[in-house]
Image (cartoon, rainbow, N blue to C red; front, top):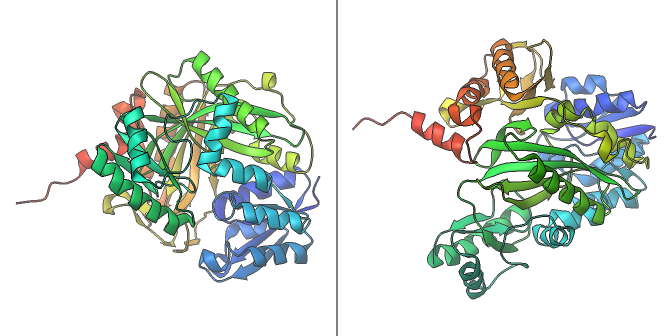
Length: 454
C-alpha cells in the first residue's frame, strides 16, 4: 500500500479521498490554490501545499506544480479525483515518468477509451452495443451525408474528445448536417484542442443509463450494475439513482457484462463508467467511457456495498480486486441530488459568497458528501457544486420519500442552491413514474417560466 497520496483536487472529492486513504493507512497531501487557502478539507490532510493563484489554469491544471509538490512531499501516488486533470493522459504519463503512481488507468488505456472513435472500436470488439454511424472521424461533408443516408435522420455530430455537450450538433436534414459538421469541429478544436468529429444516429426520447466498472492490473474487471442519470439540464446531471429503474434485468445484466468485458480487453485498472443512451424499447447504445471516479459514485456504493474510492487506491497499489462478479449484489435503491450553489430562478446563476447557515440532514440511509460548513466562503473560481445529498432505502418509492424529507432538513443560507428545484423534480410525475428522457427537466422548466407581458 502507498505511504503517502497527493490529492490533485479540491472540495468534497478531496475530502472523500482523504477519508478513504486514512482508512487504508495512507497519509495525504492536498495541493490548493490561493482561492482555497481556507478550504475546510485542508485541515483533514496531513500536509497542504499551495500551487498557485485561484484560476485553475494557474493552479489545479499546472502539471509541473503538482509534480513538484508530490516530489517535495515524497508522495508515492497521486489521486486526480474528477475534473481538472483526471482524464488527462499526458498527466498520467508524466506521473509514470516521475515514478509516481497515478491512481487511475494507464495513459494508454485512458487515451484509447477517452477518444470516442477508438472507444467505439473497442466496444464493437467486446460486443458492447454502439450507435450506428461513422467508424472514423469525418471531415468531408459528402461522406457525412452518405452516412446519414445509410442510417437515416436525425443524426448527431459529436466531438471525438471531451464532453459536456460541447462539439455536438443535431441534424435533421442535409443542410443541418453540413452546417453542424463545420461548427461542431470548430467548437471541439477550441474546447478540447482536437477538432475531430464523427456522425451517429440520434435518439429522440433517450434515457441516460451508465454502468459502473472496476478493473485491476491483473486483468480482472467487474461491473457494479447501472445508474440512471436522465435528470439533467443542458447535459449537466442533476439527479442520479441506482439501479436504473424499470430496466429489464436480463437486458441490464447483458449490457453490464459487455461493459466489463470492454474494460477487460483494454487492460483497464481503476474506476470507469461506460455511459449509454437507452431508447423506449430498452435498446442500449454506448456514448462514451469516463476513465475516472464519477460524481455519482455514492449511489452505486450504497446499493452494492463496494467502496469505489478505496478499491481504486488498492488496485493502483497493485492489489487484485477484492470482489468478484458473483460477490456483487444489488440492495435497495439510492438517489443522489447534486447540491449546486446556483439560483434556478435566475438562469442557474452561480452563487459564490459566505455561507452563514449550514445544517445537514441525518437519519437512517442519509449521506451528505460536502466540504462546506457555516463560515465557509464559496470562491467564484470553480464549479458551483458544493455537495451531494444521497439517500438509500429498501425500494425506489421509499428512497424518493426519504430524499424529500432530507431536502426539507437541509438548511443553507443566505446563498441560493438547487435544493428547492430538486424537491420539485423528485415529486414530478415523469420522475416518480420514471417515464422520462434527457430533456424532461428542460421541458418542465420551460413550462414553469413566466410569460412576458405584451
